[in-house]
Length: 375
Image 1: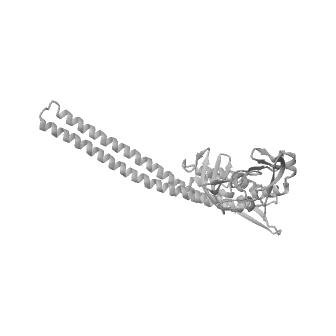
Image 2: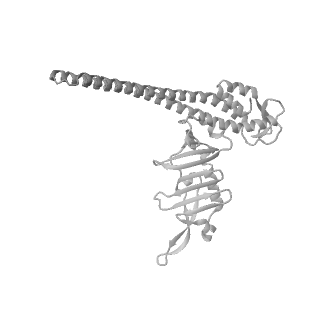
Image 3: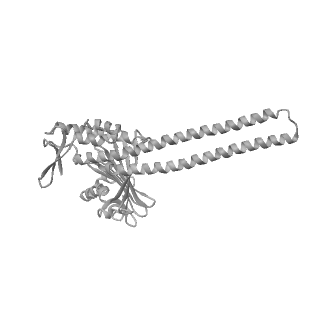
């Protein structure tokens, strides 16, 4: 697919912007009320705690005043029976005060646990709603993908970063381990000593096809990977960018050694690196959004998901403005889609429709509409 503005100039992001814009409106309508609910629960929780502290202070004050009163009325009394009554009164007052405070604490603890459970459900729901959108629809984000062995199984994560917004996905792969041969049969040259007496060093082509891939880090045009045999005796580090690649065997650089470099099958290595880069699209079984941070702080805990949406709206707003400038119908955000066979279609959204949809959220929706440039 090829995407352009209505005047046929290249669209800066090769995605269906209208579809992403509709998705943004949908998640905003769902997530903002969820965050409002979370804020309400937190505010109510603070009010409950303040009421609890106030009641405890009242109980403590009453107990103190009771004790002071008894002490005042029994000052100078030395009759054993009366002193016994005094001690019983003081003991009963203290005991009842403690019992009532514990009852209030138990009530608060129960309510806190219920609130926490509800908050966790809201947090999970927010991440679940945002997950599909955050996968591919945050324009201009830098994405870094990692694969690593954890608890003897292959795990991974994807980290996205745009401006002061960062988000992280947990990746599950279609297999628990990954060997070189799962992608490509590969041999790498190393120095090896041979002979009984002279122990002369010779170039040896080591078949690493059965080696485990222990780590992969992929970022834009760069890649790093670690290959290791079962006994961890041989370890290779491969790193590459768009211009070249580097291979280390233990602490020795193969690609800098003239003889080893000459024995290296560069086409095969390049093919292997290409397949490593494709690993995160071909072998990922599922993705789960697990964390969002804004300015380095947890956006859900800080109730700043709306601020995250505002950032996305500002990014989308620039494209909305450009669509309107390069479109032919006033008030319509239009893109052209050219299919591989040459068929062209147009998709559009009206500014008024977007503004109307967002207005159902309230003042937050109106603010998003302003940032999108549709109001």
